[in-house]
Length: 292
Image 1: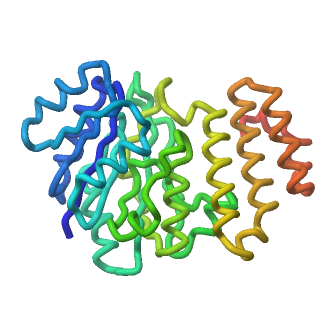
Image 2: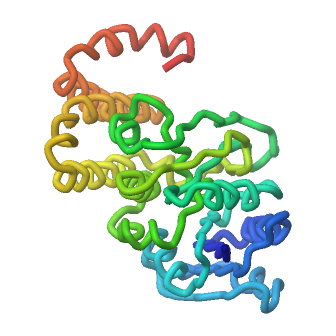
């Protein structure tokens, strides 16, 4: 199977060289590497040019990460597609270990892996994320009750067949687009998991996941589509799913210091799942212990 690596980037010239080097340092070397520059105004083009013809460079007007990834897939030819965010770094055996799962089971459409989150300034490890599921995981993704998939774009590899069947990334989403794609693929295919931290996920102030309001907008669109297209069995999970999701959202708003939004989303969570009121009643105590 041929493997294509897609790297979307916007003003990450300070990071993208490390990302590209980690892709070419793989024990299973990619068959092609495509960088989609989404309108950068920094030195991104110069850094990429330093890699010569080994990298296919596409520059376009800024349209968002989802559209950039879709463009990269359109320009690619691989049977398997691995996405690498320009500020992340792969461990050397990442592509090898994920590709083996596709080769073993033709029913798999997506393989994810564990991640190491590290501080961009010090390089120190913040957390290891090695929980995840395999097999049929669509319901778990919908419900937010378990760590179903490590949905960072850098952690997933998909088959071209699955990507096209799911319709690719939704260009309307600036946050939650990975979750959305993983769910749509998981509705159709089995999911594989490598329980090792094969991605080094860089934590820094510009990371998209820090924008909680954009997360709320993007995931709101995800749920709107999921319940509209999922049929009766998915519709039956609506209140449970939205109760759990708003609980997570409330916690994110609290940590961001946006207390009005915290109260708003906490109230929505309890409205959808009244049994969750105990969680919020004990919230101040958990915050003091650092467990929420």
